Image (cartoon, rainbow, N blue to C red):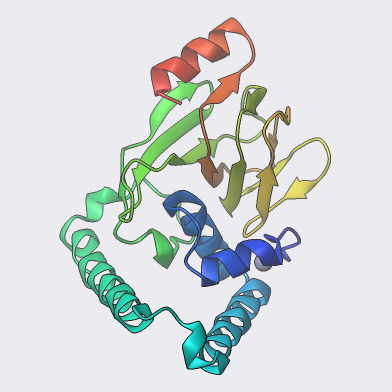
Length: 223
Ligand SMILES: [Zn+2]
């Protein structure tokens, strides 16, 4: 299936500049990994950023710019080196995964809880990105024909489809598709097709489910 829903260029630009927080950065990275179009754009933006830095007259740079750049390079190297360790040592850090579903490279080094039941045909796995273990990022696994209870959220919610497909009442989202919803959007995605739908999601703030049972489930799951 062709990827039809992409993050905006402003998201890719923020990612290239290293300005996204851990959760959103992880989602955008996973998208770029799955989407040749965005991978290409990201590469171009990163190259453009490098050219921009080189073309700046030296006097416009802060005196400590070189030291800060070197610090950033060291931090990047350190995070890459440490990201090589945990997953190889602890393969159980990955929740049970359907055969044939891709496991994004960008998730290597993150830690996951096993799937937890949150309702009929619904499971979630809380994850801790390496960069910020407290980031509000999780995997959702929803069975065919099921939907997440209707919910709103105060901040931004980003969703990246890893496996399967859902329909949000307006449009179909399949493997590789990216969706962002602003606070206040009321949506109830329904899973399409014969296989479970697995999404990576990042939210700012708590999800607020409608209805007493859904609120109870949300509270139990710590969402
Ligand atoms: Zn894309």
